[in-house]
Image (cartoon, rainbow over all chains, first blue to last red; front, side):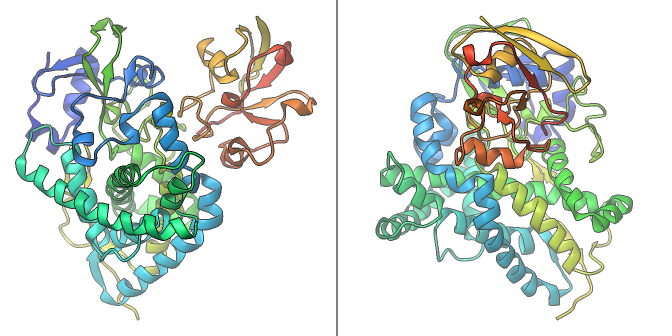
Length: 388
Length: 107
């Protein structure tokens, strides 16, 4: 049994995860009503055993926010939705179709930003860029600037609302109602003419998804498709801005940003944990998990497990390549992984460090990093030489 | 049972007796052959169960235009003509005695 202080966890969950890995790697939390699985090897084992660890969690917070969706399905019902939605996110489509659109979007955002000389790299650079990119990949148009980021934040807050805060539910509900309307318009549009987008792929799949399924799964994609890339971007940009030797190497060889991406996702995993429900009794790390019980796979902890990853608390792009857990594993392996790798690692970081000359953190910057279900930097205030 | 020989990046070899019917990835990971990560658990969405099949048999080559074919462009170790995602290779008699090279990097 373990009692968690959610406030402490939000400030810094890593000391608690380290303690659990050492003392109680499968620990029951009464407040979360679930077993926390915190060691790398156990998490991988459970991820690879979907026949026991079901994604169809009863009373799922995510399902409460977005309705029935692919993240909370197993087997054939999951496969049906995933295979309808996935094709536009595969790496060849990213390279051949989206890379050009993303580069154009990045140029637009930087053109607006460059003359200003100061701003917040999260709110003023990566948030508008990821919004434009995700709108293109999804195939929804006309969403005002800032709106998708708000939607994502409100839905993710609901998804992590283990404290049952009523205001969080209300904001999440308002966000999803707005999304439903945008998706309805998009579905109408692609019904007449297919395009490269995810919504079009879902509508024109071999087994087409009806409107409500398109809506619910677009909500899931917006939930994970803004918040998480923003957080990974923030971590890597912060590290590069505070480590001159690292920055010099990245300027010299922008391909190294790919390593920054994987290491940022590992070091501060934007998704700290996700739930599974136990279908039949299972023993892990000497603990018997009864049928019907719930677990949280704490990937934010597994990614800091020094049994597998040396000096795991240190950010180090030169470490032995490691199969981190930040994208999850098994059938629910992050659908947006290839989009995120490209738009953050291959595009956003190299572009912003190249274009904004003399980029530096504002004096006295103290990083505000918070969250334990979802974790990342909240802002990154910077200055640069303003040029037209 | 189907006998399959793995060559590991350190030069050592490992022979397994695999049950027919499942994927080569499952056979390898259930026999604890190191170096096959298989993050996505066999759904051809991660490109981390890459192997090289030591064979000239065209029936064992990656099908052109498949999702696997696409993913093989994005493996951590270089793609070769005999590259496969082991999750997409079915274990059967056609693999009897085959040597499978595990690449140096999956991530």
